Image: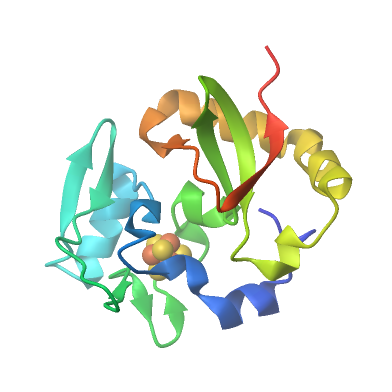
Amino acid sequence: MIKEILSGKTCAECRMCCIFDRYDIWETPVFTEEIKNKVLEYVPDAPFAKVGTGYMLNAGEITDGQIYSCPALTENGCILGDGKPFDCRIWPFRVMNRDGIRVIAVSSLCDEVHNQTHEKLRNFLKKGLAEKIFSYADKYPETVKPYYDNYTVIFPEEK
Ligand code: SF4
């Protein structure tokens, strides 16, 4: 979905968005029922919890230094391939609520995207992805995270 600004090779070699520590465990993606069921076919004990209209991973208590891997992550990458959750397909973008306004922000953990100019990222989002992200957030409000300052706001929602 964002191949124009992030190469598939960089993405495949990184996996930063698939592993979590206690500070970014809130970043685990929201799964639709269909995608959650797909993961359960491969990993029957994957710990899903219903959150709003979707499902999230219930990682339990994560201690300092501990890493939690998404159960869909294997040595060969994500078992879901192109059928991964929307949150994963748009990462390092996230939709967030900053002071009551929905914004699309970019994570500083992804150098390749984060280091591009805001203008370039805004222009990319304007070509249709911003609209898709906000309409997905209408359907799955739990994908809207509280603003976190490790993210840079690129695209506030225009009403
Ligand atoms: S669903 Fe796939 S891409 Fe998304 S966090 Fe899990 S392993 Fe990574």
